[in-house]
Image (cartoon, rainbow, N blue to C red):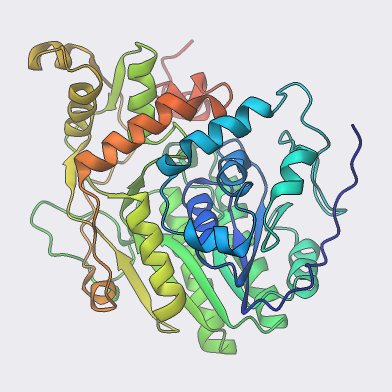
Amino acid sequence: MTSTAPSLTPPAADFTKRILVTGGAGFIGSHVVIHLVKCYPQYYIVNLDSLDYCSCVRNVHSAISSCGSEHELQTRGDNTEEDDVEREKATESEEDEDDVGQRLRGSFCEPGDEYISDEVLATLPNNYKFIHGNITGADLVGYILKTERIDTIMHFAAQSHVDNSFGNSIDFSKTNILGTHVLLEAARLYGIKRFIHVSTDEVYGEGRPDSARMTEDHVLEPTNPYAATKAGAEFLVKSFHRSFGLPTIITRSNNVYGPHQYPEKLVPKIINQILRDRPVTIHGDGMHTRNYLYISDVVAAFDLILHEGKVGEVYNIGGENELSNRLVAMDLLAMMKPQLVGADKAILITHVQDRPFNDHRYVIDSAKIRRLGWNEKVTWREGLRKTVKWFCRYGHRFDNIDHALEAHPINFKKTYMVNLP
């Protein structure tokens, strides 16, 4: 089977918005892309992703490849991934895993491991395009903005695994700071009308048990390399808004979980450890807490910010599910191994060496985005059920995740666990 890389020139259509989503094959970005493509057929969505180890463009294409006409897109706009299960099964059964066609890449794109079949390419809706490339490539980014006539950027692309940042911090600076700078400069040159920068609650630094909720004007005090690079990127975004008038918006969310999340993060990691009958590993005493938001609630927040967010503002996106790491593990064990009693579940948990520094908690005030009309809708138990169900069915999409299920990344072990052979 042969194929040529498609032109970067968009189809002839009168789209009302032309949105570049960076990191659109990653966890949150993939859900935002699917939502925009299905709910807004009048928008043109360009998905730019480097297809790093934690990306899976198949998650996007399996959800949108059978959308077809604008009518179908509109009527399916409110569907969840579970509504698409039967359609997705049919699509997967027709694909030949050993012969899936030629790699989709433009002249600027680096070779990678992700292949897209000609059959899938032929069924993607005309308001969507995928481009394999890196945000640190200024020529590629500028070419996309110019050729695709982009007017809006939603910037999700980032190195985001905190554990990896302790032993590989330079790469985090390259992607999170340099990559953001490249996008900002291109956005300035090509007159982007809205630039939504996705940050994290970790830029605030550690909250103590008695800490008041942190509002958007709280000082930034990041405590790990990942959070520091995200804070640095934020300062660049703010500087481009103030110096050049670039219409930027910044978001800072709590921990997000759900389908498509790579199993290095706590919730999918524990799910996959349980599925494989491996010990459930918890850093330290497991009493550090995080606030969790299900992915569909976060997508709704980004939809609202895209359409109603005020330029120059920062929006916290926070929920009401503050849980310790140990309690997350116990809840998942109760759901996935209901035959076990409390003591038996606890035996399956192994406490391992903690990070060099692990923030006790993050506590943010989301009153500003709630005033726009956003509210958390999915309960913790409902979100867990949906996430477990997805990984039982589609977790195989992530190849060779054994390393992700280890208690610590390899570079973390080499840097901090000096007693290892």
